[in-house]
Image (cartoon, rainbow, N blue to C red; front, side, top):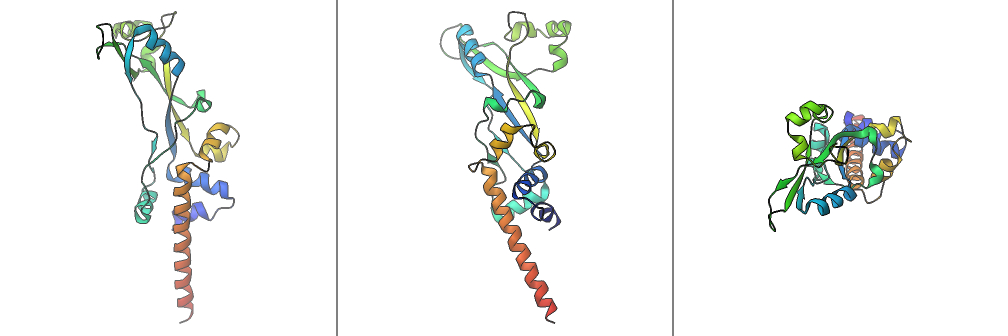
Length: 210
């Protein structure tokens, strides 16, 4: 039980919750779109549809936690609610999403489909390579000829709340909501650990009787 003990035998209920997330899940990958820019592009280019939507699912990074969740019948994956724009922390950006203009879909011949795609930063920041890859013809550009960033992918390490508790207040509040699915999983694992402790303490008491 060392893994569970390292979480649930620590002091402070909130610290235990964040230890659980840090040790069990390590980090959270989430995605936020700039809906205002997407709507502007939709009107300008007659966009019929766009791609790139993801589900906000989380899976354990810990093999031990995965085994525990299987034993207690808990879900190995859970979905969070859609992150809001208050979670747009620039220092957590790991990918930028650009819009590629493709002819197709239903409607008129001018109808456009706009998949949201990742482009290596070295291409975006190198004008020559950018043109060689014909990205200036494929992507939605702003008035300065730069590709428009329609959204971002973020990577957040749960440990950050333990080491810098005031740095990401919106993320902290997001995960500490009573309605966050991780809360129930944490409670279920905590209950399982307590049952294990009581079971082995009872076994030790029986051994002491002989």
